[in-house]
Length: 283
Ligand code: AMP
Image (cartoon, rainbow, N blue to C red):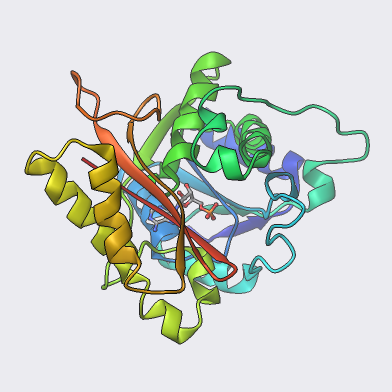
């Protein structure tokens, strides 16, 4: 099937309800564009289940703080469309800001728990902005399921929480992180790294894997574990650790041991000059 590029909510609704009345399952992949293999892996996964796939491309102003990189966030819709054709996506939904937030828009979503830790401490308005756009997109697309990358681990958990808390009729799936050959998690922001910084960025994943190895070998002190990460990352003098925490994968609160089916996850944010990178590894 050819890829349809849709800009209006009414048109998208018409297409999706057509699919549904034909008995098709609909999968949804929300993105901010500047697509890479990480995004495309979500589409590929959805296609293997024989679903129709809608990918949204929308740089959501609500989830950027006043001093963050909204203005310079890459906008590459033409290239994104070409990439989405290669993985057989069915629809790209690329609304304008006024289509999503017309004059008079005044309703937002607020999370008072998971959104207050980790990235939420340094980006206090980010997750509410993200939830508001995801809630609207889920209402507009009305998919059977939506795919989120574990790259944004906290985002994935907060969206799961919203869907449960508000009784939304959609299944949320978390998908594995796609990495560059040297281990750096793929991200639309990696393009902002100057070559000399890019060459050092593998230290983040190296730090995460070394910390996980120490945990497997029995180290349980969170100070000692975080020091292992810090020593490796500080091999690059330019990298500043904004936070590094080992947390329960559901509550996102600090934890040292697995209890029942709860995994641990080490989540980190690292500043490289004005480029902020996040990554994580499940234990
Ligand atoms: P973004 O465009 O950065 O908002 O990301 C859109 C979706 O793609 C989110 O669910 C991300 O978690 C996911 N994603 C981004 N990078 C990766 C990656 N390297 N591996 C897997 N999923 C990713």
